[in-house]
Structure formats: C-alpha cells, structure tokens
Image (tube, rainbow, N blue to C red; front, side, top):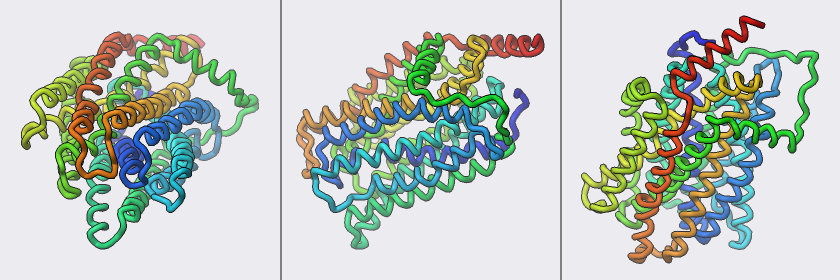
Length: 459
C-alpha cells in the first residue's frame, strides 16, 4: 500500500509510543538505580539481573515474531497480541519498582523473574506493534513521517518518565511515605499510563488491521530449531548484517547513557529531587524540537546519512563535556543535548529502516516476514540493555561505588562520568562506521518496490 497516510492514522498509530517510551525508559533509566539504592542490591548483581532479562528477551523475541506473523483472527493480525499484552506490561512496571520485604538473598531471584516476565509482555506488544507500522504504508518517505509521529508521542512518554519518578518520589517522601512505598506508587502510575496508551492504539488501528479469517492452508507449527534457522537466514541478508551491528552498538550507547544519567546527576552534580527532573526534561524537549529538522535531514541526506550526522554531533558534544567538565549551566546543557542526540534520533529514524528491509526480504526470498524482521529490533534492544547494564554495573563495582553513601569517592565519580561520556562515545564511533556501510538508500528502496510491482503484475 502506497497511499499517503492521514494525520488521524498517524496519530492513532503513534499514541502507543507513549506507553512504549514509559516502559522502556523507566526500566532503562531507573531500574539499576532503584535496585542498588532502594532495594539494596549489589551493583554487579543488579547488572547481572538486567543481563538475565536480556537473554530471556533474546529467546522470546523470535517466538513472538513468528507468532505475530501467523495470527489470523476476525479482530485482525497484529492487534489481538497487542491487546493481550497491554495490561500485563503495565503491571510488570509496577512490580519492578516495588521493594518487597523479603530476604536480601531472594531479592535478585525475584527481580530477575519479574524482569523476565516484563520483557515477555513488553515484547509481546512491541513486536506486533512494530510490524503493524510496516503494514500501514510501503512509501519510503511516509514511513519516516509515521515514525516521526510515533517519536512525538515517544517524547511525551519521555517527558512523563524523566520528570515524574524523581519528582513524585520526593513529594511522597516529604509527605511521610517511605522511599520504597514512594517508588512503588510511582511505578503503579507509570504502568497505568503505559497501558492506557497501548489500548488507545489497539482501538485506533482497527481499519489498518482488518479481519483475517483462517484459510484452508495449514498454519506452520512452532518449531524452535526451524524458527532460529529462519532468523539466521534473515540475519544473513546483506542490509540486516549492518543493521544488526549498528543497532546493537547504538542501543548499548543508549543503555549506558540512560542508566548512568541518574547516578551522574545525583552523585556527581549533587542535584536534589526537585532539580533532577528539570534537567532531565531538557532531553525530551530537545528531541521534540528536533523532529522537523530530522524530517528535513532525512530528505536531504537519506536515513543512514542522517543517523551518522546526528550521532557524530552527539559524540562530539559528549567529548567536549568530558574534556571541559560539567561545571555551570551552559556545560550542563551541552552535556544533556549531547546525551539526547545520542539517544533520541535512533527512535526517530531506525524503526523505519527496519521497515525498508521487509521489502528487500520479500524481493530476495519471496517471503513476507515482517514480524520476524521487526522483532530483531526488540531482540537487539534487550540484548543491548543487558550489555549496557552489565558494563555499568561492573565498572561501578570496580570503581568502589557504595549505594549506602550519600557522597561517593572521587574514583567512583570519575567512572560515573566516564560511563556517560567516554564509554558511550566508543560505541557511537563504531555504530557510525556500520551505518555508513548499510546498503539500502532511498533510490535502492524505490527500485525494490518497482521490481515487486512488476513481479506482481506478471503473476
């Protein structure tokens, strides 16, 4: 389908990105901090908990991708799964930020289990949601615009998640609530917001996910060995090779910047619970302001050129921040904008890059594996989040970070700073190299659509 999408269709699809952003950002930004400073878990163990969740998500992603491609119901192909996992995703966010009064030896097991459950539910929604976006339109430019609309709502979710937790926790604590109860209440509110956003898109996308009734053809059975062979065949597609590498590197950078930011603002800069949300608010507001520029740059330089440009700029700003130091308001803004540039533009551009691979796969193999292809992004997200958390946890542990201390040692603060500047920069540079080698340009995608059209006419 190549007809231009209406504003109403773009808004209806994009709304779920509020929930997507709340779920993903809450886990990426606050979970390590919560586990170490509220639940009292050792930083290295907290990193391992995140890694276990990532491994589980790596296993569950292909399964959800396969199932998403096989669903045939009178309610559509993608929306039934989206609705099924909308509410459980919100419940898991609440549980992850609830500090239960259980023995410390059991806590890591509990949070590891809940995190696995969270990734199961989040991915169960995210994979069909992403696949649904690829089915909205096959137009190269309109896909970018659709994802920019989703990015707008993603930023709304970012604003909620960046501002609400630390601010609300501070308010509730001043009113006499314990720190654990304050975090639990905040997790509950975030879970409710996320669920509502998910449900709105399920309802709004009805016409884009028409009923599909079962055919006489037998459905493929879920064969795990065959399933992973199928995924390896997708991974061997030339565009996917570079896309997987670039996504992994970019999302490790994202994970490090997000997870370490609260440590940096709290322990290095000494910001209060009222000041922290105001600083963190700069990131989503900057991202929102950059959406029109993103659309222009993509039209001017193509998607891969835009990614390389933005990530290069972000890395440069982070490097300046590390060399000069974050002393004063101006350098704080430079640092936050550098961090935002290395995290926001992935979500504004990269999902539509995955959509373009769907037509390449259809042309090369004759298979329509949209669910499987877009599930790679979820798989990479979780793996990268786990890797980033392990890196951060190991470095904090080695640097002597102690969650019981209000003032950390100079060594600990130095490495907190490095983990939000130098370490992510390494991954950014490698990502840019991979992005520049990605072969699908606007012109090549147009040629693919033309060949697919000619093949269809000849049949």
